[in-house]
Structures are given as structure tokens and as C-alpha cells.
View (cartoon, rainbow, N blue to C red):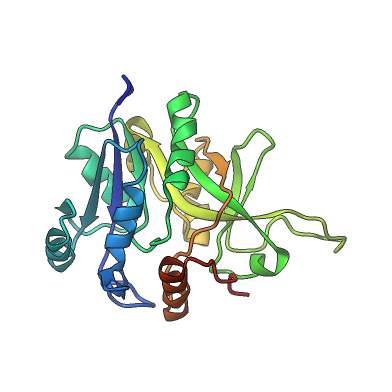
Length: 250
């Protein structure tokens, strides 16, 4: 650990997904998706521990079959709430929330999100990646606008910023849903009620911004493929098994 406080990676993995039922256990090249997430995240040298957190005994059993540490939790409305339960039951100081439906996550993504936390200037961090104007129109793609100093101004499902005069040249960034937290930030998140912006956009990270809590946003060189549909699953499989990044959906 090189003298720094303990860092724990947590992969929240719900079985009851709406658009693609049971997606965290769907096979990619003979392995369940959550195993891909675990194995790729484990490449980061900055994680002292890595585990799956799930409310599903079936997911826990499958993880055990694959040699993956898994914690059975209660039911929670969000991944951050599930992460809070893990925090209460573990002894980490830094925590990384690694989505269970992000099988193309890379160690570089995890290392990038931990950088601002290790610097000590912020308690919450996340990632962005550049996208084109067409991809920004997709409401399933969450966008982030950040300051020149690298702190989040806003997250939205709309294409922000809005190019009012249609002159072009506007930079759009997709939010990659990987979060780093200090223990203190997670404790504060838990105490805060849902905010109006969070309820409107259905984006839990807006709870921090609504309450004046800074979020550092690091820029990644490569995107990830979050799996929400059968088409996403095909794209992830093409990348993981073929080694070539498919074009993003329009």
C-alpha cells in the first residue's frame, strides 16, 4: 500500500435489471459478465481489495464458483447506497464503485479515478471521455460539464452544453460511471436526502453538487461499454473477444 490508507474496489451487481434481465450473469466468451469486470479491475495495482456486492444469493454463488470474493448485502436504491453498507462492514479509507455492467473497464480507468483522491484535495471523483455531437443526443448517455480546473459543474441526460447558435465546436463529454470516494464523503452522502436535481435527472451524483460537494472529473483516453441492452452486450463481446473497439451507437 506504500503507506497510504487502504483502498477497496466494490462491484455492485444487481441481478434484477429492467432492460436486460440478469445481465451481470450473462455469458461473454463462456464467463459471466461480472467475472470480466472483476478480472479487468483486478489489474489495477492501486486496489488493496476487490469484491462484488450483491443482494442476490445466485450472484453470490456464481461469484464463489469463479473464485470471486462476494458480499451479500441488503436491498438498496442505488449503487452508492450498497457501497455504503460495504463501507460499514470493511476497513477501507478509499472506495471505488465499479459498475457490474462495465465489462470493458480497464486498470487505467481505476487509476485515473483514484488520482484526485490520493491527492487529498477532494472526496469524490469520477471520469469523462470525449464524444461527438451525435452521440451527445442520446439520453441514455449521461453527459458531464466540468470546469477548466477539472471539477464537475453538472451532469445531464440532455446534450450539454447547448450550442444555442449552432456554430459547432462545442466539446461534449460522456460521463463514465466509475466513482471514487473517501470514507468521509460516503458517510456524508448517506446522511443527505435525495436532491431535486437528482430526482429530476435520476442521477445520484447530483446529490453531491446540489449540496456544494465538489466532484473531481478526470479525462480518460478510452471509453467503456456499459451494457444495458442486447446490442451493448454484442459490442462488449466484440471488444473483449475480438480486441477491436466497435463504433459507438448513434
